[in-house]
Amino acid sequence: MESFMIKNFNEMLNMVKENEVKKTVVIAAAQTDTAIEAAVLAKSENLAESILVGDKNSIEDIIKKQFPEYEGRFQIVDTGKDLNKACAQSVSLIRENAGQIILKGKADTALLLKAVLDKENGLRTGEVISDVLAYESPERVLLMTDGGINLYPDLNEKISIVKNAVKVAHALGNPMPKVALLAAVEVVNPKMQCTLDASVIAKMNHRNQIAQCIIDGPLAFDNAINMDAAKMKGIDSPVAGQADILVVPNIEAGNIFGKCLTYYCQWRVAHVVMGTKAPILIASRADNAETKMLCMAMGALSAN
Image (tube, rainbow, N blue to C red; front, side):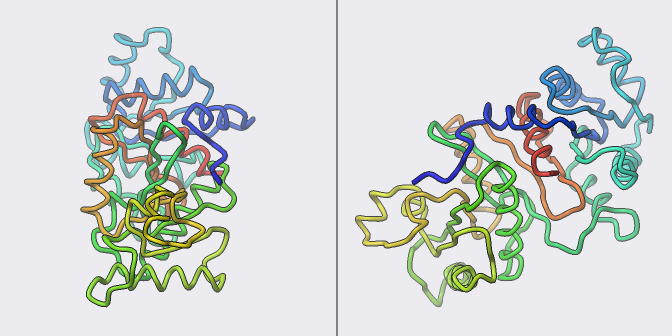
């Protein structure tokens, strides 16, 4: 039984379009072609408005040369070429409720997160932040976390990572997502910490300490997504073979797994950082405008 209500990213875009009140995305250091093109796409598709923060001369030059029909249609906040200032100003706009989402432009991820996590002027909530990625498979949308923020999360951090991903699944229309805690094996092995963590988190879910989702683990990858593999190994689980969220044990597993899906499988991807006062979009500077636009749509739903 499939529990995800959206089967592809087009359905996600339609969900955003149906919202009467459009979100505003603040683009930190927006003076890049793809960031501005993403803003244009989001505006033309009626997904979101954008505030462009950064070097005003460069931003206006890109718009004039590539998108002349959009001259004068975006609010531009001039911070010059100083990327630190652009990030700080973007966070400030969120704190002032001028926008609800931040998209990384030319700035490095570390630079943006430094401003986001600033103790005095940032967007901290006291929660663990984590990157939730959505992949568009031929059958449905599958979530994976955390492949971009937490290096070697401990038990408490993994609990927060799960909760962040569940919030995103809810935003994408899945009221009871099935969460698979991945490991190399599907049995608890005292020598493998990730299997011990998985068994504890699964038990917490069984006792309703982690609610609004169904969790099982440890599960090997094949058992998590393939029902036949799970049956062959005699795994009786409400998650096995039909996981909606895949929780990887560390950043290496998530990074390698995610790039395999992107480059070998050619699956489209969108992702959002959760755990702060506003969704943070840290799409790679090498990502195309469509990917950044999809991240904006995912962020718009997650900001509700």
